[in-house]
Each structure stands twice: as structure tokens, then as C-alpha cells.
Length: 411
Image 1 (tube, rainbow, N blue to C red):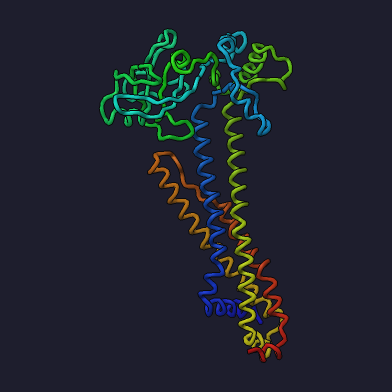
Image 2: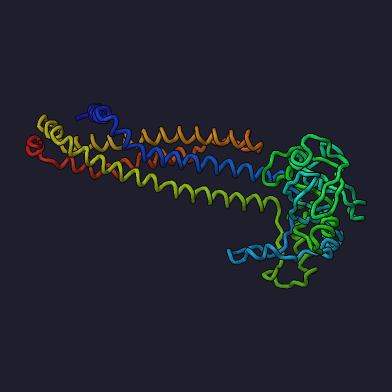
């Protein structure tokens, strides 16, 4: 019996029992769809995060308080208050860090902004006037605060576009005053919409860090210090100088005792990429459970099909079909079912991923791009076909073993 006849017999068998065939591939479709969704959305999230990180500039270095976590128990180190004004002074000394162009402290807090009867929960970000240049954020209306505002602890703020919409309902917010923690601040600028992302300036209130520390936070330390290298080629050298300077400032001689961490944008992008990739494939492993369940379902239904088609098997053997022909036919039926399920799952998963990406992009206004997961598609189709071979093998062997005489007598 040629492979052409085996294929034709398999297709005929599947077509004769369409309802059963549909139910058989249903589990495979769900599993492959889930894998496609996870891989596509994971790739989209990774691209969004990396674009936000890279948007800070390749020459940017960040000093963060607390040692770099090496285990879940080290997470408390991230809330350290180890970065102080003396560290900023040491970093700005050209003798210590010759390749430094700018150094900017940041403090972060939260509060409720109030204007009249309108309130809105905001993130307060305090920094210096060079924030606009380093983070590439510029007011669509008004101006940014100045170095004099930082020195004098001026009560001026620049607000995000969403804060303006929520508090002022379309009215002009410039030179109006809002309250945060019972302190009045004058609005001197409104940022253009950023579209959200890893750093969502739309929901932020920006002010001089000295103002935030004095009137809102009551702290004397920094949440991080952003350093800009003079050029892209000296980033690693500057990062090393920053590390050595902070160790000297903190009287640390043993690197394992560092109470801070220094990261370049390349380091951060690489780590985030590793984390998102690991999370994506973990979710793929979870979604693959559905494929295993679908494989067990295929085996059960194929066993039922073998029993129901016992007389057909006996008749085919009586007409000269060998055990190998019967084995090939039922095995091919299983592979065809799972392969079709894989194709349907790939198309359905890609379609849903596209719609979700479109919804996130349009609905939330973030730069979420649809990514067709070729790796997921190839993996999904290959795995689905392999499931047909693995889980269809036992029913096919049972069909091949049937005696033609006993099979013809089967009622």
C-alpha cells in the first residue's frame, strides 16, 4: 500500500467523523494559541521596555542605593538611603570622574494633587534643571524649572499631560497653583503626552529635588543619581570611576560590601531582556500543559475510534492491508489532526495577539508593537505534530494488532 493510498485513507477517515475530529484537535488549538499569545506579547513587552531604557541614552549611567540583589532576601537592600549629598559632590569632582558630563540626583515620592474640588494621585519626581536634557522631556507649554529654582527650593512644578487633564478639565493650568500634602506649588510647565511606558511622565509632577526633599519627603538622601558620560566610548570607564568614587566616599574597601550598585543602560537592557525572556518561556512551559492534556485526549479518542472501526480494520486486512498499513493509517490520522490543530492555533494565537497589541497601543496610548512569534509558530507546529506521533502511536499499534477474523466478527 503506497503512502498516497495511506494518506487518502487517513483523510477519508477524518472526514467521515468531522465532529470527533474537531473535538480531538480542540485541546491542541487551545495549547498552541496560548503559546503564540504568550510569546508574541512577551516579545512586545520586551521591545517596549528596551525602547524605554534605550531612550534614556547610551551614555547614561545610574547609581542606585543598596547593593545589587543576588537573591529574593536581598530585595530590602533596594530601599537603602546610602546615596547622600556628599556622594554627589564627590562625583561632580572632575578629579574623581574625569569623563563625567553631568550628574543629577533624583528623589521619588507620591501624593495627591489637589486643585479646587479635583484630586489626582500623582508620582512626584524631584531632580535638577538638567532633567529635561538627560531624559529628553520638554514642556509643550510653559518652561522647565531652572538651576536657581533648585538652589532656592522654589515651589514651582512641571506637570504631566494626564495630571493637567484630570485637574483642570481642559482649562489652562499655567501659573495656577495645586496643593500636594498641604503645600502650594505654582505650575510653570506642562509636558507633552509621552504615551506611558516604563517611565510614565504623563502622571508625574516634576519639581526641584531640594523642594521635594524639604516640603514633601523630609529626606536627605537620593533615590538614585543619574550620570551622563561625556561620550559613548567612555561609558565603561566612567562607570568604573563612579564605582571607585562611591566606595571611597562610603569608606568601603571590600567590593562585596558595596551599599550601592552602578548600572549602564547596556547592562540594564541586557538584564531586563534576560528577565523578560525567562518569564516568557516560563509562561510557555505553563501553557504547554494544555498541549499535554490535548495529547492525552487525542490518545483516548483515537482508542475509541479504533474500537468503533474494528470491522473496517478487519475488512481492510481481509483485502490485503498489512499491519504496517493499518499502523501508518491511524498514526497519520493522529499527526494530521494535531498538525491541523497546530496551524489553527498559530493563526488564532497570532490574530488574538495582534488585536491585543492594537488595543494596548490605541486604548492605552503606549507604543506597543505586534510581533509575530516565528519561534513560537515553529515550536508550536513541531510540538503539535510530535504529539500526534507520541500519543497516536499506542492507538495505532492497537489497531494494527487486531486479528482480521476477530475484527470481522466484531459487532
